[in-house]
Amino acid sequence: MCTTTPHRLARTWRRESIDAERLLWFHLRDGRLAGLEVHRGHPIGPFVAPFLVLDPRLVVETVERLQAARADDARVRFMARRGFSLLSVSQHDVLVRTDQVLERILEAALPAGSARRAIAR
Image (tube, rainbow, N blue to C red):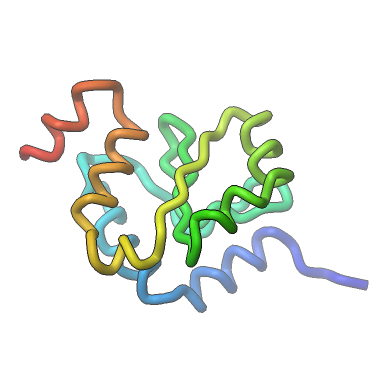
């Protein structure tokens, strides 16, 4: 019998994160990105959100290939039914184009127009 819970999976995920996730967390934690409240490795039902922006309920994930992220329809539908949107960013972009990735996260998380003001600060 499997005793793995979403909370245990989240804890394991946080411990074993990859370089792109560590770098992204460095920029997202403690409100460093425009004061957004971001949680790392947050369970949502049976799934774990790699990064969760609480308001506006945005899940951010790093993926090796963006096509693979689109293939996980059950997870996307589950989160959408609960009011979450999903933003997938490539691990390569996080490592090489960090500023552009952070801008995409802001654009997805903030109302139109306010993302530009937050980046300019």
